[in-house]
Amino acid sequence: MVDTSDMLVFWAVVIARFLIPLTIPRYPLPGVLACLILDGIDQTIFQLFTNLPLEGYQSYDKSLDIYYLTITYLSTLRNWSNLYAFKLDRFLFYYRLVGVAIFEFTQLRSMLLVFPNTFEYFFIFYEAIRLKWDPEVLTKSKLITAAALIWVFIKIPQEYWIHVAQLDTTDWIRANPSNAFILIAYAIFLLGMAWWLVRDLPPMRPGLEISADPFQPASEKLPGKKTKINFPVIDSSERFFNNALVEKILLVSLLGIIFAQVLPDVRSSNFQLAIGTAIIIIINTALSHWLARRGTHWKSIIREFIVMSLVNLGIVLAFDFLLPRYNGSINLFNTLFFILLLTLNVTLYDRYRVLHARNNNNNNNNNNNNNNNKGS
Image (tube, rainbow, N blue to C red; front, side, top):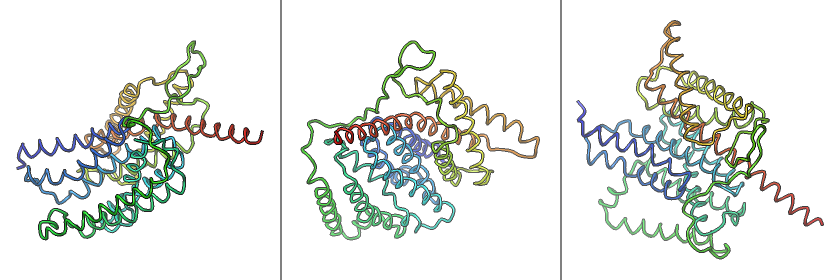
C-alpha cells in the first residue's frame, strides 16, 4: 500500500509542475527557469522523500515537460515582437512535440535524441536577450546560428546523456571527482559561445526587462458599442475554418495523445481521442465566433476559461450519459482532466493569437511605411 506521505510529496510536485508554468506568459525567463529546475530535481525529490516506484517516470516526465513547453510556446504568441524568431521557435516546438509523441508510441529513447528539445533553450536565449536589448536586434542569421549552436552543442549531448546513455551526472562525478573539471571546461566553452553571439549587439539598455507586457491591441470601436475597447477580441469577420483552427486541433490532439500514455485506464484509441478533441475545439470556436458576431467579447481571460470549462463539462456529461446506451463508456476522471487541459490551452491560444496577429499586422504596416518613405 502506498504511504500517505509519499502521495503528499508526489501530488505537491505534480501540482507545482502544473501551476508554475502559468507564470511564464507574464514572467517568461523566471518562469521557464523555475520549470527547468523543478524538472531537473523532481526525480531526486521522489528518490529522497518517497518509496514510490519510478519505472514509468520517463513517460510521466516527458508529458509534464510537454505541458509546460506548450504554455511556453503560447507565451511567444503573447510576447514576442521578433516575428522570425517566433516562426523559428514554433518550428522547434512542434518538432519536439512530434518527437515526444513518437517516443510514447515506440518507447525508443533514440527518438528523443533525433527530436531534441532545442525549443526550450532557444526560448531562454531570446528571453535572456530581451532582458537587456530590444529583441528586434536579433537578425535572421543570428537567430539561425543560435538555434544551430544550441541544437549541436547543448541539446544533442544532453539528450544522449539523459535518455540514451541514461547516465546520472551526480553519480558520474562521485565515481571520479576530476570529471567535474570536464563540466567546468564545457561550461566555459558555452559561455564563450554565448559571448560570441552577443558581441556585436548594440549597447545594452539600463535595467532588466523581467516581466513581459503583451502587445496591446489598439483601441477600436466595435459595432453596437458606444466606447472603444482595448482588450484583445476575436475578429467576427474572420473565416471560421482557418489555420488557427487547424493548429489548435493539432496542438491539443498531440498534447492529449501524449498524456493518454501516462494516465491509467484510458479507454479511447489515439484516433478517437483526436476526433473527440477536434469536435470539442470546433464547438468552442463556433461558440466564440457566434458571441463575437453578437458583439460579446471576453474581457477577462479567467472568465473565458471558467465559462468555456463549464461548456465543455456539459459536453462531457452528455457523452457520459449517452454512450452507455450505445455500449460505450468513458473514464470520467481522465476525460475531465483532458477537458481542463484542452480548455486551458485553447483559451490561452485564442487570447494570445489575437495579440500576435495585431503585432504581425503592425509590423507589416511599419515595413510598408518604411518602404514608401524610401521610395519617396
